[in-house]
Amino acid sequence: MLVAAGMATLAGAPDAGADDFDIGAWFDPDVMSTAAETAFRQLVVDPIHDGIEDWIHSDLGQQIDTAINQLSGLYLIGDGAPGTAENPDGGVGGLWFGDGGDGWDATGAGQAGGDGGAALSLFGIGGDGGDAVDGDTLSGLPALGGAGGNGGLLGSHGAVGAFGTLASGPPVVTTGGLDSIDTWITDGDGRVVVLHGLAEVYKVAPFAPSAIGFGDDDAQFLADNGFNVVRLGVIWAGVEPQPGVFDRSYLDSIDETVQTLARHGIHVVLDMHQDGYSSVFGGEGAPEWATQTGGLPNPSLGFPYDYFFNPAQYHAWDALWSNTAAPDGMGLANHYAQMWEYVADYFHGNPNVAGYEIMNEPWGGSFGVGSYFGTGILTPFYNQVDAAIRAVDPSTPVYFEPDLLTTNGLPLTLGTVDDPNSVLSFHDYADSFLPGLGLGAQSASNAVTYGTSHNIPVLLSEFGATNDYSNISDTLRIADQNRIGWTEWEYSDKGDITTTGGGNGWLVADPARPPTGDNLDTEKLAALATPYPQAISGTPSSWSFDSATGTFQLSYSTERADGLGSFGDGSQTTISTPAVEYPNGYQVSVTGGQVVSAPKAAVLTIASDPGADTVSVTVRPAG
Image (cartoon, rainbow, N blue to C red; front, side):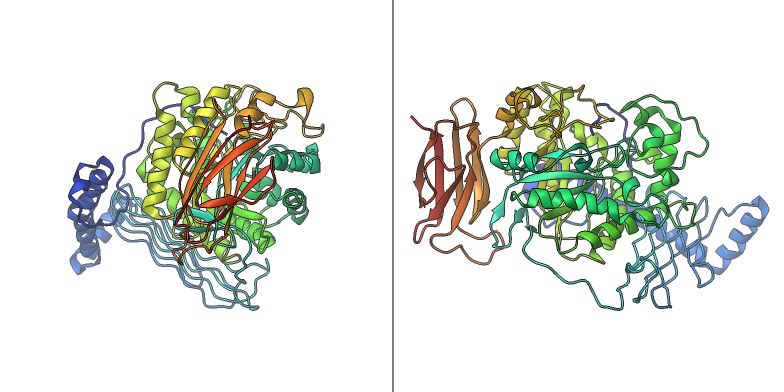
């Protein structure tokens, strides 16, 4: 869920592209840092790497390197061997110098590509994954492209290979659900959608909220109070209990909750949740067969301390990031990608699924939490999983998170996830555990800066886990100022075995009981159920809510977020006006539009005036 701790980052040089010249940028620390990293790579790292490779492939270099390797009895200098039909995976590069070998490009119908070999040396580049071949497979899923190999500290990760296509043809592009257009989430009509909701994650078997009574009355309660999204937990151990064996009945139980929420107009972001890697370490996430401890000590320190001080958990994370072979011989990262391929194939075409969130709060293990992990390990992993999802579902947005410690305001170090239909999902617990430092606002600023520079939307997908209601309100204010949606942690804490919320995280104590009376935290509901624009026929410039006066304000232009002109006259914008904030109703003043909903409606609807370029709305309590 969250971690409040500090840790030294492992330095590294991320890939970066050159920016257009802007004299003002020279006074921007972020731009200066990127420029310095780019210059260091171009002027130092790349020439050294190229020189090493020239030496390795020269006649003299091959003679001397062979002698050194034979004399030492180790492979110290040289590139990894490329994959072959007999041995599809690329070889590991030399310990001192050399790149990983590229994976084999498959040749037979429905065959997977080989994995790229790792580069162990400082400047080494991981081998690229091999391409899969189109055709049917035993799994019924498109063949996997090979995973790229890890790079050295100053090197780079290999690229994932191309995934295959089934004989029936490529997956169908679907419409009607939510999408991402530039920095906005949009609906099928092109309106900007703002998401407000909560997380619901059941962390113990059978890993499905329906098993603890989350049902129709909970969905109705959420809708009645203006919430339009639930971040719904899915657990790897539930999806793939044995290597390559997928439990469709588990996804049926998750889909039951998706459909329940859909009947009340609530979207779902499917969150592949983990805390502490797996149950082996007292958490949840990976199945036991995918948890490799290396025989290292596994002290039971509790969440979140196991992240920092449990050697066995470090080893488990390292095995995942290194694509170490599972008991069936397939790499763990490949298993994770194929697991997501199965999930996305199941939910493909479901307009109620607003997104697939690849992993909750990833931890770097011994790779650290700095730019080497974020750019060199985590981003390529996301690109691999994203490719698996896109092999079966080209339409549903893909959500991805930075590393775990960014929850406390540390800088984001992700590279570029190669999918324009994606959303940055970030968590913000900084002000809960490090109050007075302004780190909550910094977390949001870091996320928005990343989203803007990569031209994708941003969602604050976790915060809260507290009964400090002023902290919740402050976080919502930060989200409004940055024009981003959110999902608070959490609807219910039943089965929340990994939390630092101290039993104060829930909005509803027990979803098996009605969300009323002592089963409901009414003060938290009042803090969360604020007015907000749910769907905007245009592009918002600002919105805000003053909880002291009950005043909500929204301003937007009628220009479409997708750049395809403007919305027509009379286009409607909807604003949630929950009764918990306006028990006696509300009064509305509008410039550039008209109220077309009934008085005291739980959803205020504004229709734009003929020829209006901008619309401004103010809502105040009645009286």
